[in-house]
Amino acid sequence: MTARVVLEKVTFTYPGADGPALADVSLELRAGEVLVATGASGAGCSTLLLVATGFAPRVVGGHLVGERRIAAERCGIVFARPWTQLTGLCSSVRDEIAFGPASRGLPRDDVLAAAERAMADLHVAHLAERDPSQLSGGELQRVVLAAALAMDPEVLALDDPAAELDPEAADALYDVLPAVAAAGTAVAVATPDLERAARVASAAVVLEGGRIVARGRPAEVLGGTDVARIAGAAGCPPPLPLDVPALLRRVGR
Amino acid sequence: MIGYVPGHSPLHRAHPYTTLALAGALLLGAFAATRPVEVWALVGAAAVFAAAGGALRASARPALLLSLPIWVLLFVLHGLLGAEPRMVVGPVSLSVPGIARALVLGGRITAIVLGFLTALATVSPHRLVEAMTAGGVPFGRTFLLASTLTILPRMRERAARILEAQQCRGLRLGGSVVARLRALGPLTLPLVLGALAEVDEQVLALDARGAGSAARRTALDPPPDSASQRALRRVLLVLVVAAYAWKFWRMRG
Image 1: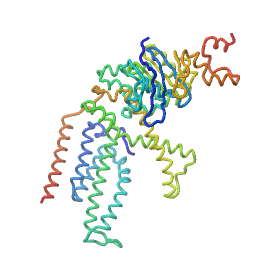
Image 2 (image 1 turned 45 degrees about the vertical axis):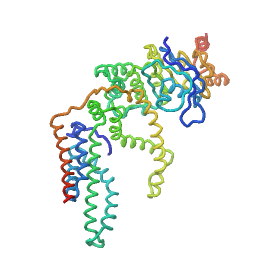
Image 3 (image 1 turned 135 degrees about the vertical axis):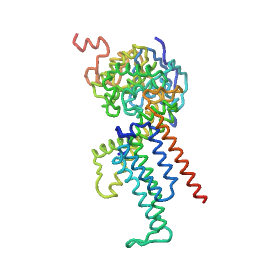
Image 4 (image 1 turned 90 degrees about the horizontal axis):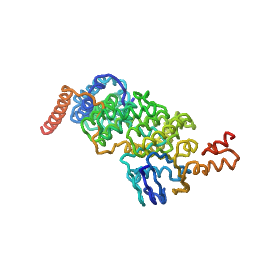
């Protein structure tokens, strides 16, 4: 698989901050992969996404030390709060989703085709004529993800994308990610939602204080997270079987 | 009601440049007019403009609320404290030139506010963006103008959400003027801080969707323009230039 993003000993500090938000991070994000980054609040997961997609320091400012290679022309990002990601200039969902491809200067028919494709992939075609500001949070987050996908990104970052969603909408959103990755996009998700993350991840990292403290296959990495440890200490089963043996144990075989 | 109100009036159907040109002509004309009769003819024109957009009822109340404090101030400054000669109306002695001055200044403000609110109510931000995109205007300028048209309704929606949340926590809105002023604190602080926090995410989201791209944006559905509307805009330009020429010629005389 082609490496879309390579970070080698990257340290990133926000403008005016006393210390780095990311420290000495080395990471590879490949096409077709769903990488999950998790950690406590302030661990640096969101910053990792901003650095991996090139938005930091280009848009947010700050200072980056180390080597970063991004082999992608288009990087998309989706945040937790969908209403902050609307352009505020479009009167319909179709126009909102077409905004990105139109910005690329593609021919009109290609722009509309990209929008239709993204709406079909995210199952929001029935909302095409609706005013985005009148949608529910779950619908809106799917529209925002469709808008990001319509840009045909080579790298897609999602920062706690289900934080504002009900369980059903969160499941639907995570269910889309393997297909997005299978189409060749490198997907990175920062989330504390280990249960859903484990279902879709092909690789995982755990951050603490801006440093990667664990990495590897989701079953290995996420099984050792605080949630799993706490659940184990309390004598409860882990939140989700993270590998086949655990699944078999859970169902009693 | 401040902000775009969907409709089918002649102003809604007109090319956005035409509606903005009419509002702009009212604004510039108001400053060119120096006599009460001229200014109040423009106030009448602004009312016709609002009626043509089906926005007279929607615009008149906010225009009155916005102009009223200025009218009171003008009446005190010019009407009560203005120069001789004076006339006595009941128990009050009024300055004759001061009243004329207050009528001119107040009329200007009223015409401008009414014209601006009518433009806000009848120019769809989406159509304006499409018109400017089709005209090859860089997106940065387009966004600046269109977001000016949408900022008031967006702030109002946000303020309503904050108000509901604060009322749930026991904020009381009624009572004396002092109590009402005190209630402004829990409203304005989260309003401003929340807006600033969300701007960061919106900048990133827009950048990710190519808003800063050097490519020329594709217009998807540009509003139709016509020879008669283009001619009307030229006539308005000529009228404004003539009004200022007339004003300066009179000042020299």
